[in-house]
Length: 116
Image 1 (cartoon, rainbow, N blue to C red):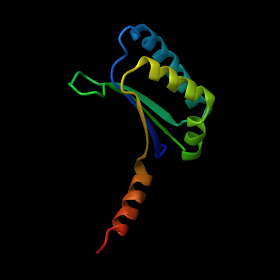
Image 2 (cartoon, helix red, strand yellow):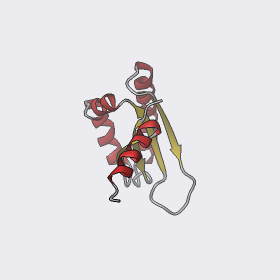
Image 3 (cartoon, rainbow, N blue to C red):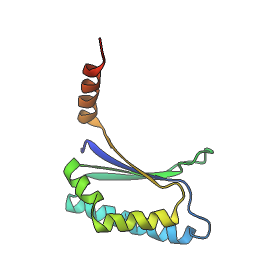
């Protein structure tokens, strides 16, 4: 499983854009499924959070190879989806991260950098 990840989170749809956001979500899930079938990404999960009073109410977690994720995030289709989502959803945000073996490598590097 990929050790590089993209976390794309959001709050709620913008008032009046709920239907647009729902339609786009379906298109985006198909897009990610196609990327997974093509081997561009290794896996993805979409999550809707239960109401909790915060401003993160859903996210997509995408795993893949760092170079492929870099290429994906600079592609026109990705940017188009991100722009559309930004017009439809409040508090849209995207982060890159690591997990698995790469997380442990980074923790080891961090630990070595701590002054004695």
